[in-house]
Image 1 (tube, rainbow, N blue to C red):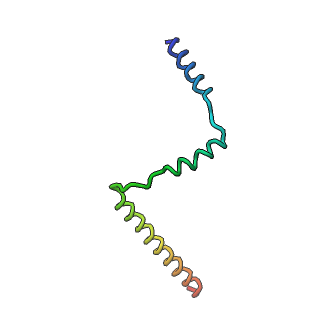
Image 2: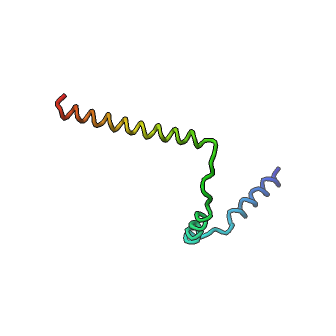
Image 3: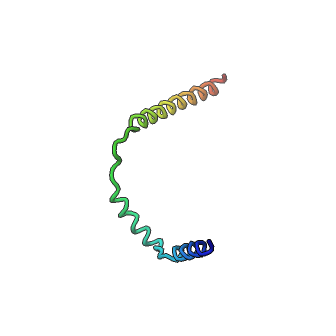
Length: 78
């Protein structure tokens, strides 16, 4: 049991000492990874996501109309 704990601790210590990239290198690698990104593929959820977005757009329209109606009531003294 003690040997297992020591082995695990040694493995963690070695892993912690691994090479790390500098921030500049990480930023340089980022655009290359973005360039290789594939376009989104069609999934079974696309129709549901479109319906959800449409519902959100309709709700925004309703909210805007309610806000305009409330402002008109306030301006009218009611």
